[in-house]
Image 1 (cartoon, rainbow, N blue to C red):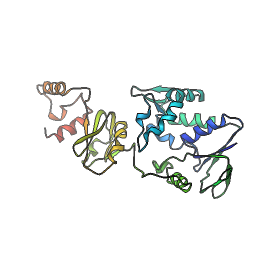
Image 2: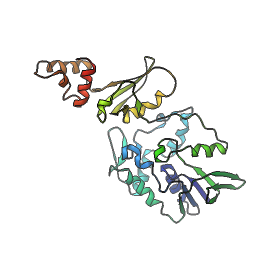
Image 3: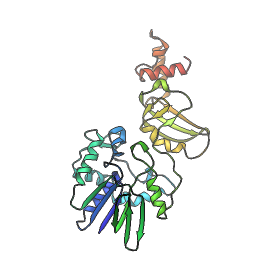
Image 4: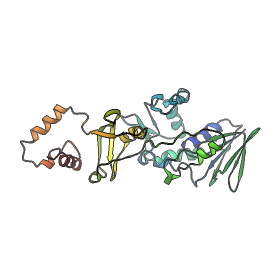
Length: 304
């Protein structure tokens, strides 16, 4: 059987390797870029967060989030880690549950996948940009401007529109729509947030915090983790986890940051009160508690 796969990102490569385990299959992996896993190299700030020990169906969203239960029940986190280990990848886990390659480099993940594709029954076609798919009575015809592929089964793993500078495009949606599939409204997720108030003075500062999203004054969602301030707003893992909520509907959205979530209000006030007896300036009031630049901006914003 000939298995055609469009897209050589993480899912496309994994699908190709799984299909190739049945030696009677011939797998044709088609990728429009000149290399595999290009978007994968940028994940996790270049570290590649390849799974999470706490991954389950509760982490999936949408109109029918239960769609993921079947896949997760058949192939769980332990299976994923074992699969990568068999490919030769050593991993480490952070307290948050995020799993990264031991090398701390995303290219390690791409390389083990790329090396694994060197199997006799896998044909890799780079620079193959699919223009059209035709459904036949007994298979599919996949056409590019220069070539045509015939296959018995077809997997579309083009990825989404995110990361256009890394190759993200509308092509996958368009190909699926041409086959009669429904495409729901696209919304951003796992993205930075732009702030109405300027935080440019904090560009590059990182901190641990609890971020809470409020819609029209009501708590909508919250998450705890690392935040990164940018020239235009906030980013980092904790923001990625709540950013999808902000675009759900119109309204007045606000983000509140607790920059000392491990300290109670009374404990924090006591620590600051003790410092008032020392010969320090107001701008240094939060030194030792927060990043110096962050502490100074907060004191200034508070009018102290």
